[in-house]
Every structure is written in structure tokens, then in C-alpha cells.
Image (tube, rainbow, N blue to C red; front, side, top):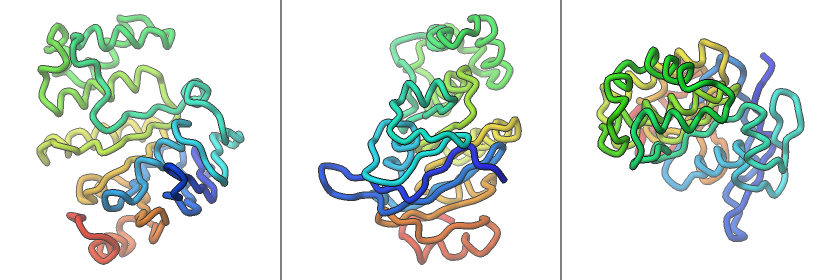
Length: 235
């Protein structure tokens, strides 16, 4: 399968301390790849490298076969990379409708963006006039996804989608993520808690202390090895 997103032997550092030690990852169109591992493993740094928010010491970032190493976040966003960060990334003092209105810079009309958002997440339509900061955590995550999808991404990067949410809400959100992937989007999901995402993942990689210790299909024995690879998984 041709990869839309590739990290090839990526090394990256924080304040002179190397935190990624030659990470290799591939995400194809229509594929959900779960990047698992304990806190401090380098998962978010990996996403930030993919989004152009963190520089690489060495290695390559390739998008759709194009060399994008060193490209800035705006160039990667124009090329189809969308990052939904930990903490949901909505504007809490604006209404749901105004949060969506801000995405008209993509060239879509407000009506088109709202139709897409409310069809996928009907609860947002019922909350259109509500201030985003007063939504439930799950509804805020839906709004973040709806904003991200307004950019019509080729690659979707998700950081800790499940954080602070009830398991049932997480399950519903990941059903939507699976549907997004079925439409041809390459999805890379960072999760600390494996059980949240392995049900929809096509491929999983476990990052420990900046190195990929194991990767493969979730049903290929990797699930059984997670507890040994790192503490804190709920696989």
C-alpha cells in the first residue's frame, strides 16, 4: 500500500535531549494507525513532527511521496495535514456556529461547513448557538473533529482523543474516526490507553522511550504484548 504519510528514521530533540531515536511510521489512505505508549514516550512529539510543529534532527518527512522535511505547519496544512491537538483545540468563548464559521478560510461556505458538521454530529446542530466552553467534553471533541474535517484533510493527526471522556463517548468518537478513514483519509492516532483505539486500528505501533519497540496488526499478538511493553495500558 502506498503511504500518504511517512516518517523515515526520524530523530528529534527537546532542549538538546534526543526524544525520538529513529522513528519509522507509515500511514496509508483509508488506514487508521494507532501510536501507543506510556507518558513521555515521544508520541506527541511524533505528531508534531508530522504536522511541522517540531523540527527533526535527522530523518525524513514524506507526504504523498513528496519530500516535506523542514516544511512549516502552513505548508503541511495546505498539503492536507490536519492536527487535532490534545485539549481539543476549540475556541471556548465562541459559539459552536462561530467556531465553524472560522473554517470558511478553507474556501467552503458557512452553509457547507455547517451541513457537513451537523450531518456527522447532529448534537452540534442542536447546540449551534451554545458557547463551546459549556459543551460536554465529548461534544467539544466532536466540534474539534468537525472543524478539522472542514479542511478536507488527506492526513488526520489525533492526539489523545479519549482524554477525560467516558468510555461510551470514546467508543462513539472512534466509530466516527473509522468512518473518516473509510472515506480515504490517512489517520494517525496517539493514545496512551490501547483499549480505546485498537478496535478500529488497522495497524499499531508501540513507542517506548523514543523508539518503536513493536508494530503490527492489533490482532497479530501485539495486543497481548502491550502490558509487557509498557505500564499503564488497558489493553
